[in-house]
Image (cartoon, rainbow, N blue to C red; front, top):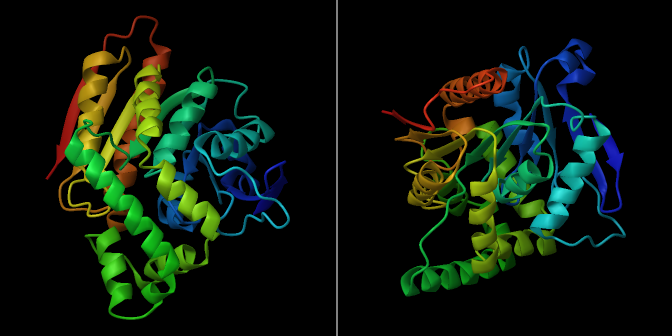
Length: 307
């Protein structure tokens, strides 16, 4: 447990190499959080990964134990990428090709920016539940409606601390079962996150221009990419991640793989940690072999469907 002083915030982070220095010789994985949640929800996954990987989690400005007292940083994709980049450089993870980046939900947009910024250090990218959508009048209207819901949810978010709204909130996030410990964490993080930060993140996550930039950026990632989604996700339509995979499969030069968790929701890392971690490991191993080959001959896209 450590803090990094940056121009944006006093950034809280955890690095499994602090308690096991031997992990500094292992490939590193940095996890980028979703909307209005601290890094605590990654712990079941990092506990399973840490024997073989150096795992880094952190609380973005406006969430968890990161402090922005007296500072009002810009809550944009670039701003969030800047603070994560400061951490990557502080830990020396930009010095060699030994880094996997995992981004969840809106964290997929931030992690994609990091993948381009640190392309020479990147082994692989995992984009979890952060898709794209064809621009039509219908989707534009839907995004406008969603923006209104964000405003309402932020103004009245404390109501999600009481039943039955608490249970409804959790069921929207997780279709599969998650423990009470992590249900409590999700509610606590959402209701205690900085309102300005949470509102801004919710809005840029559905901004059409931000989504266009995100789409272009995903196609530019030169390392292997895993698109991962719970097909019973009620928070973000899972079809968007499938669309992202199809576009990368067609247009990108580097390998792309799709994993669909057919009966899981927005939080596969909590709903079925074992299966989620297994897919991450497969992806990491593939990426490491991809860079060891002088003439990669693996197919450019592989589709995996979990029943």
